[in-house]
Length: 276
Image (cartoon, rainbow, N blue to C red; front, side, top):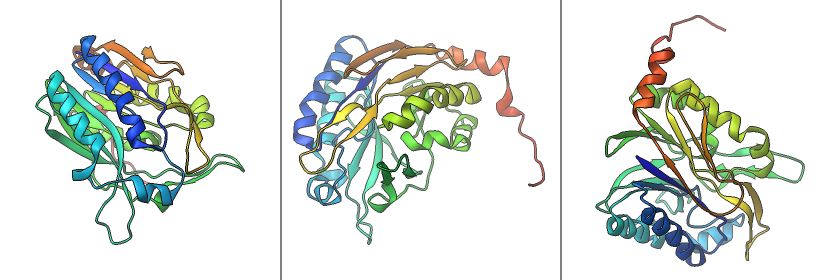
């Protein structure tokens, strides 16, 4: 299976971002990718809640999702729209951070709403409260993309290994981690966490990322780490996209999943214990 990681530097304008994203998806398909993955916040990245209320749409009205579905069908590829910010019908008005797996027929094969919200104090000047604007999901999602079983996650989920273990024990062979990882925490933790999740589960980990400075007409902007990664089930880094936007190709042999799990069958070694 040939996969393509799309690395983006989106702005807070979905109409500006969409043609760039589609260009990368088309380039990936032309290079033989059977599955193409985009990062978290593919439609837009904004720090302004007021601006988010203006630009975000419900799923059935979102132009980015509609265009990506059309492109997947045109190219005959599996396409993971890493995540889109979307309006919901929740009474409190909070949005959803939703990942979509789109099939070669253009239909949505699976949806996953990010479970863990990025509520952190990175530094004195960088404080994030994702839960103030987005409501968390409540269900893990395992989907089938052709011959591959895919466990869907998003960004901050990466710090919660029990989610990945559950997905692997349910049959996942590939774990997707689309992200807009902070540039400070990314430099410290991104690679080691992704490699750990691959080693712990014996899965391929595919992590398309946002990169660079994200200009905002209606906010302060922010920096993300880049370095979209593909990691093998034994923990080797198969591809690193660096810090420039673009497409990174990687070939996956799903038989490596079974080989890694045969060598260290830890997924079947859980034992009950007391405490603490």
